Image (cartoon, rainbow, N blue to C red):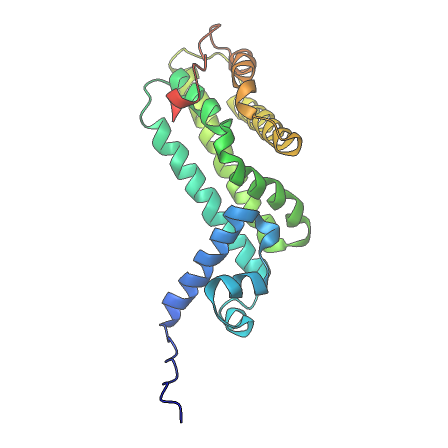
Length: 214
């Protein structure tokens, strides 16, 4: 007769298990994008049966929206920390441009691009995407408005300019992802275009290098 004892099952508190599931889903999305989030993939990552995942996350749409929100929230907080180390609106806007066009953020570009596409069929995700886009709008608009108040920028419509800048950056990042190229090489050109849009002095948003703005 075998003397091998059965392995005891690991029982976790509901809050701990729920957090573990979200953490596993977030890791999958960062590695492979939102489209990789399936019940089976999350269950395999956690090491449990799919039924347990469904018990804690009965709606995969809601889980995708939660993961998307968590990833973008981390992104915004990271950018805000970088901006807090810069003095003056022109320096902060230059750092923003360089940071967002750093090809080291490709994983988040995938999340954004897939978020826009998948939101058409996921109401929870659509709401999350709109909320996070508004956060970015407020951040960039605030930088431009500060520059106008301090006489560094002259645009009369910071909100519209912020929207256009975000669109330029998002478009270049998405194009570079599809083409397999490095967005950072367009950072200097984008900075020159941004100078015109915000009404900054020529060279006022010069991007010296990506490393200098990390």
